[in-house]
Amino acid sequence: MSPPPAIEVTALHKAYGTTPVLDGISLTVPRGTVFALLGPNGAGKTTTVNILSTLVAPDAGRVLVGGHDVVREAPAVHQLISLTGQFAAVDDLLTGRENLRMMARLTHLPRPAIAHRVAELLDQFDLTQAADRLVRTYSGGMRRRLDIAVSLLAQPQVLFLDEPTTGLDPRSRQGVWDLVRTLTEEGTTVVLTTQYLEEADALADHIAVLHGGHIVAEGSAASLKRLVGADVVEVSYADGRRDAIPTDGSIEDLRRILAEVDHTGPVEHLALREPSLDDVFLQLTGSPAGEPAAPTVRKALS
Image (cartoon, rainbow, N blue to C red):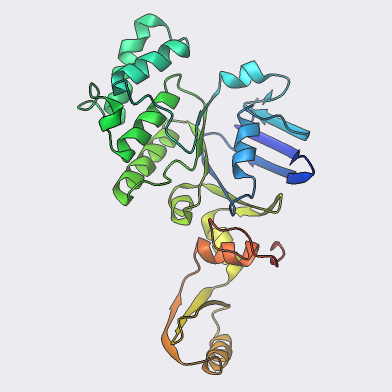
């Protein structure tokens, strides 16, 4: 018999007071994959992660992690998961090694195994040379790597990363990406929320776009881009306006778009490019990633 998916969510509902946050979302996350949850600010990404990791109780619906119900079997779920939040939860007054040792004891790792596991993680996350320095001397990227290392002490089957690279410089962000790829190669399932669309594009096997309490589209990055069209005509006008116009790629459609652009105003730059996840966001939610949705949004594409 095949093992269950890493995560199964069916008709999940959650509201805070009279404000609905999640309105019947359903999703499945296969084992050993990276699943990215995207959406504008306030879309419910963090709420979803908090429910999946047992921190928040759902109002209705069913959520299974590793085949265990997050409400009725929370202790069993705790044995399978780990969560890294948006901000590094490490102690600045301890060294990197001391942070790992302390958390190893709190997670009840066998004492004889702690020293080996700590050394293993310091090496894996390129922190051996800084292991005995106070964390307050670490860069943002080093702190984030240590935070993720702490999450992996108990070798979880499912790792939740809630906006793990927010505020990091490009080099540190790339370092976290490399770590995520290594984890999935070793069999860990990673659930990622992010506002960086290139991050989801680079890492995710499957992406779900959350908007208005619903999953409005899901699939691979390539399949989501196909929702926009074959290509996008990017136009920059002399007055500072910019447009990204989907096209089916035909000569007739390009001629139509060029005629429309010609009547819109003086053009400074025009280019034809492949669709991006930014274009998907604009089409599905009416707003760029990381910004609140516009009052009027497009309907979900089927």
